[in-house]
Length: 396
Image 1 (cartoon, rainbow, N blue to C red):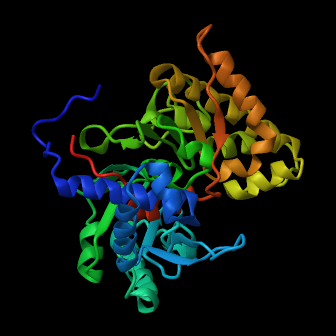
Image 2: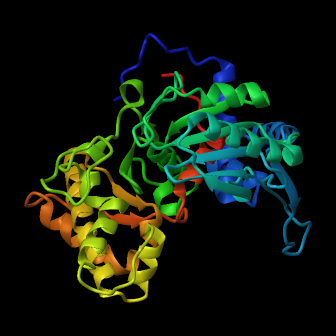
């Protein structure tokens, strides 16, 4: 049972019930559409008249469209689907090496995007982000409802406080400056949390049915987004999920963002894999890998030293995942980031390392590659805006 927080609870008035029913109908259209009013009434046990009133409201708000389905002999049914004619959100994925700015429709489909190298100077990066957002707004200003930003560091979404160790940025006013420059609502969050939110709302169907899972984001570092009971768990000041800095060994091939060679990210990040490959080339004439994408391509082309470095990195990734499974008992673990482009080369090694690191008798949970592409964090940034459209009203 969930204990009611009396400090923030509000009683269930009639408008609360109406809002909940509205979200239920909207999510049926999102997940089951095209779908008819009668199908929604049958599935939800709502009165047909209630469904029609809600549908009329959702149409008036520009959230759903209706059209004729195929006739089976009589009048063709009227089917409902999400309105996807316009861009409704802008996402900003501010990464350690590059920043992506994109627009999305209501279904989470990316419509237009651009990217540029992330400048270590925070002011210059903010100005480039604002310029890119303004360029998109010249085309979509009438329909954009908000901006989401994912960031590789500690983020408190409630206060916009942040710390990005890679650049030593602390509390840069990116959200405030974007609000001032655009007049739009702006939400920010840690990149792994944002990616977990995207998996929850826009990932593969079997994940959308899972209420408890962990998103492991493998990039320059290793981040985790924890989902409990269908919502991202952020903890005090948004600091939950920093498992990339849990100690799993000694003498890692690289130091973590805080300078330690004992952390999980020091063993299992992209930088760790690149360092292993670079070490293996000493005294040989093998092709270099200037970045992680080049490294992945070498592995996919059959370069044995790249494959070996990838598999060793997967081993340590599995050690950390085993700790998460034992500590949090999720229903599933999702792995995201560019590394999933070579999933076929290492997923068996990852599973074996995870299983061998679990306490005897502790069940192995499904470990799944993200289906949000190589950059789940841009979908995460978009989700910071879109999820509020579909999330259920909470009064507990």
